[in-house]
Image 1 (cartoon, rainbow, N blue to C red):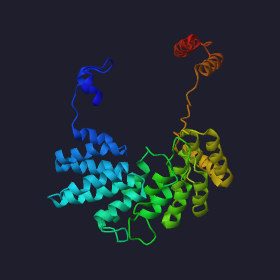
Image 2: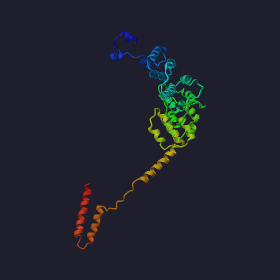
Image 3: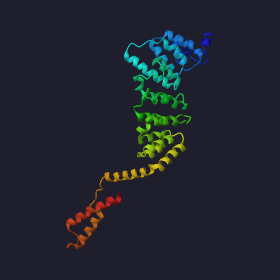
Image 4: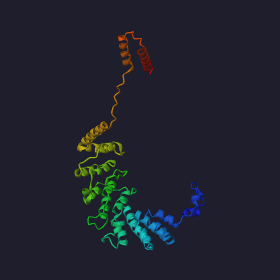
Length: 331
């Protein structure tokens, strides 16, 4: 921006972009991602010049970025929404943004400012939104480090039940078991915490299929000890679902075959064969005599006839059979 004042044009940037005057709100929305203190004056100017809905949007961006100094600048300037629906929506989204930041410190900051402390029970809007909070936590792909997963999970879904609760256990297992980073990090520790919190009691054999895409062998073993059943398409899914590490997928498949999946696959294949045989269309028997056999019968009749085979009926029938034989030979 300082360079624009002394350089009217840029050799590589078009003038319509180079000469554009960005508002403080636009600058702040980009600057919230960076925690450098030099951006704070722009954030303060944006809050002073923007409307309340825009300031609320900036506050949510600051929460998602985990920018606590920016939150301290924006939050005192916010005004309470006029409608109950808007206030409830903001309350829910404030906590979702804090969880998305993957920072326990940011979650505690929201608790202290909105819930009057970190030791108080969460309001209903937060407690009943546990399924969404877990989805938001697993949806942040920008920060791939997985060592903080367990810390955040244990804090948000604490054993005392004073904070968020999980209601859809199958959906929660889906998000955890299918999570995979580009660095190959695992979140087995988080799954163990999820397993001890109630995942064991609510687990099903269908969770095994969630382990395939990310090659979660340790988690697959835990689920199998509680649910030894296998679904018929498990080995087929091991072959068709993509994987970044072929050796890990091969290990998953071999482990499953050694723990009952092979026998189930053979049994299901036999059942499918029997079903195909039962549902197959019946074979229609063709009792029609071939033209060759007809000609042989006619020759026998001609030998036995009194007129030497020159009866009009036998002669015409023989001609017809000869034509049929001729057509078959041409085909």
